[in-house]
Image (cartoon, rainbow, N blue to C red; front, top):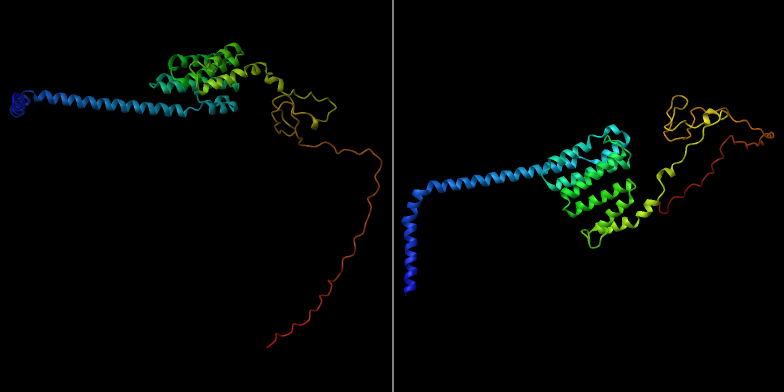
Amino acid sequence: MKAEERHELKENDLMSWLRYGLPIWLKNNGSYVLLVLALGFLGWRLWSMYEQKQADALERAWTELGAVNPRMAIFMASADPKSDPGTASKLIGIIDSADSKAVKAEALLELGDFYLLNVAFDNNTTGSDRRETLSKADAVYNRVLKEVGDDTRVAGMAYLGLAAVAEDRADWDVARKQYEVLADKNGRFAGTPFNELGAGMLAKLEDRRNAPALAAYVVPPRPAASSSTPEWMRPAGPPGGAALPGGTPAMTLPGAWQLPTQMGPPATFKGPPIGPAPSFTLPPTPTSAPATPTLPASEPAPGK
């Protein structure tokens, strides 16, 4: 009985406070309550605007990175070294301004690959020689491991890049160490595609090391023609092509033989005389066409 009475007293006190105490409290502290609510709403709006701004910046960064196409730039520069639109500078700008680690990681990998492609295609779009370009690629891949190497995929691509740099330098021991990191069955890349890829590259490393240089497959130019060789049978000239008679440009292949614009004198046959060709007479052509045979007149059908 006493417990029920206490419960009823508590309910009565609550009802009494809601009926009389709350209005008095709001009257005395209502302005503070409104101020707190206003500040809370303002903070929520500011945070929403900040998140939207970050999302817009991230989307803009991805768009800028997608607009840079290092492989297309290398392809164009192979035909015209001056056609590169400053690919390396654009990637460096994205790396320096990116707030997202994902964008920064992808831009760094693209920059390292761009340096390697310059070496592979023997381009000079970076304004550096082969040795300096490989040093730049090595520095970029090491920066990937240091700054954004916590991502497994990004780190695997960086190790492959470092191995490629070492192979281009003919530093096979360093390349082997990079592949061993990837191929370690108990290491960081165990159970990932990088594990099998590293093992495959490691297994064929000696084959690539002992492979003949590409220069061994280059066909040497033809020897220079002698003075007795007719002009129209001579090669186009030095590597890089020459002008044919009449001003027609030659092919650019070294020592390529060109088709002449004017043939030399006709060849003279120096053998036994050839007798006259046998004659034959065609049968005469008839002057009039053969008579057309007369068909019998058709009989009328029965009943007519």
